[in-house]
Length: 434
Image 1 (tube, rainbow, N blue to C red):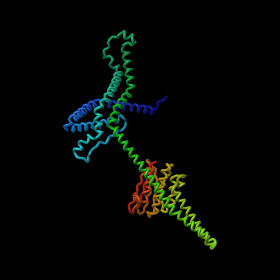
Image 2 (tube, rainbow, N blue to C red):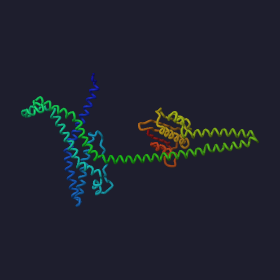
Image 3 (cartoon, rainbow, N blue to C red):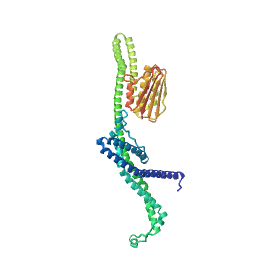
Image 4 (tube, rainbow, N blue to C red):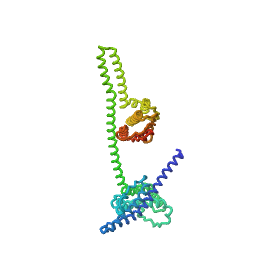
């Protein structure tokens, strides 16, 4: 079997990563032991003096100074545990009290939980540091001593063999046997050196992370969960509002269009019925006009049905639906919609209604000569832009035509922005997540 250069390089790279991590973990544990000695002495002494003299107010400045010192050691420890955990460690936000007086700002560490957690770490970090230090020193010492034993065996005193012990365990204390035994022990400890050192470093780093960053990370996760809940509630409210606006618009369109035409149609047919006996020619003219009204009513009903659920969007996708939409607009439309794969139906529907509503507003209110529609697939979702050269003045405020569209976009988890200075046209941009 032939070993390629790529295989050799890959193995070398893996070995290099293990050696680098072994060096990082070793120095972390070896430095952590003396730092732990220093912090336990300083933190215990400062805490003891501060609490003991707090009754005469002298202890408060001592406690504040001890907490500040603990924060310094905590900042150093967060920087040290990052390479061990192979991730960037979260730095909690300490209370500052910038808007308070000098005395309150000075004493604010006493009211900050993170300061006390930092001092708690300084007091008790010596426990995991000592355990990790003992394991790391033992494994490194035995590994190096065993593997290097052939180099210094000659310099060690070797008492004469105890023949009773030799007969009992079957081991002859010769130079060759001693070297083989010690090298074998060194190899065993060397083979387990990485997991032992790695486990020791992770033990010490996990204890530090739990006190120095864990509580603040948990608090931040709770805050993010509350924020996500608020966003979900806002999206739900926006969906309900968008649905209500759509239903009111549909009701208004039916009332102003097909309903009025059907009422007129019924009146025309009634008049034609009366005319058939007295004036057949006038009756035929009335029926012809009624047929025209029927066709117009059907056209309006088809237009309303396209607004509810356009079949072309379901059957052929967003690009085809937007092409048809641009073709029906009374203002010339420059459509930039490259072919993209089918998206989630809710995303396609929202993008379609954004363009449809925007083109309707352009045709009714903007007095524009041209409108540009762009649909782009970006890394975070879908970007829909509608820009015209009309009179401007559009707004997302409640009571304006775009408020319902804003609710629909927010219900889909997106964001709608409008730039519409007076006399300079309108640019509407919707960012929809996928």
